[in-house]
Image (cartoon, rainbow, N blue to C red; front, side, top):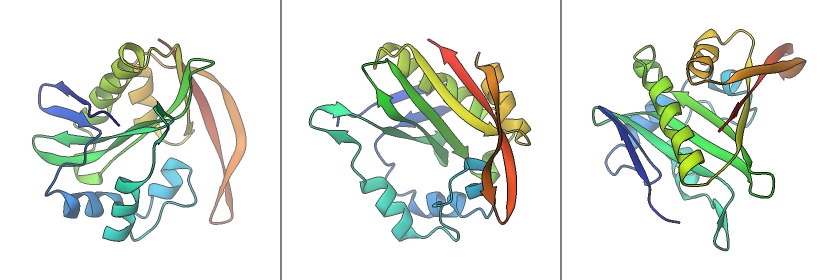
Length: 177
């Protein structure tokens, strides 16, 4: 896969793992609330170096076609989180977008600016027409990040995610590029 780097002042997103930042990655991902916030049951806690290595090494392309691309978010040379495009559908020109920011880097505009860079990549490099995602109705910071990047709420998926025997609803968002 080609190597990509996009910058916005003190933020860089790159699909090449930044050497020497494994401990920061593991520490940032080892957040008990991450599986709930990402609506992914398989997100491990505690997050280990083995989990990080498996994520870094996973296959994201079939032949010459990328079906998923993850970017490592660096903020002032510190690992801050992940943002990625998955389920890339070239025939319909769309993809799912998802992200997480480590607790020590939240509320600094990193998520908003990283999302802007990923949107630019989807539009200019992959030539996609739209992006979509879901976010828990209780995840106000993520809702804010999406709306500040032009995403609009398309609907509500009621009680769509079960976590620790409680059901959660999610807003469905999209962005036309």
